Length: 246
Length: 155
Image (tube, chains in turn green, orange):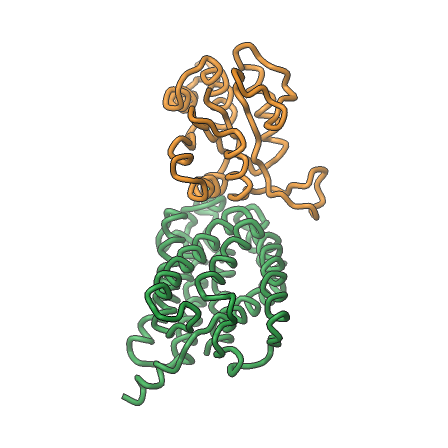
């Protein structure tokens, strides 16, 4: 039962989510050329550039709001678990992220990450609508449910499933691992570490796969032997989640 | 009259497709026609939603290669009428982003839009002709899609 109490206290706030996405943005900018190289091998070679433009816009949107709220980025977990500021709730924030990525990233990745965050935003909004306080933090179990809805939106948009050499190969095992860990009563650290590890493993598995979606599918069997750039940026998303939430 | 939106990764490709398709309009207008100065009464409007608007890119035009759902949605809105809009697309993510664009439009508007499975060049040419003859959205799209079966090289 002690474990259960601990879970109840592991909450995700809007500022915590902002921090997650800022860590993600930083990682994408560091790995921009690497992502472009991966994409040049099997796709149209713009994944690094497109993601970098998108996360730069995201940084402008989120960064200005954080500074305005007087909350430094490195304020640590104490600040990260504070209640969200008055004008932001988690649903609104995730929707802002979606719209920023759709036009900022552009291309397939913009539509796919955009669909992920849009559906996540819808789920968060419906969770928060039913409570007394729409600005409240959500539990990590609720957050896992929010991410699961995002994944469903992404799969619907891409009309893709596992083993097609796409970002889903990192997304789905990561969210499965997160949910399993939470259901087993593990804490946020264990849950987000498991998610990150599963995303990494999923990303590595794409090396052996033949691409069935997107520009890489034009290569047929020649796409085998290359790591999928989309699954790689998705791994960075879960790596950032481990840093922000664990 | 059904209007056409050309969605391509490449601005120049889309402009070229528009140029070719405009030739086919029955009672063809001036090919410089675009959404802002078009005669909206009895001429098919063909507009381009191609590339990702980007002021900072190195191209001659402020668009980089790719497709952008919000830009596509705005372009459809500009030329939408009750008769509907047919969207012609080039490659994968142009389809993804057009589908997303339709989600952003009001349902009554999206309900009168179709994404054509037609090949871009042949489809746009066929659709321009069919639309200019005053055919309805289904007919225009069916004709465009059947352009996929045109035999280019005689056996």
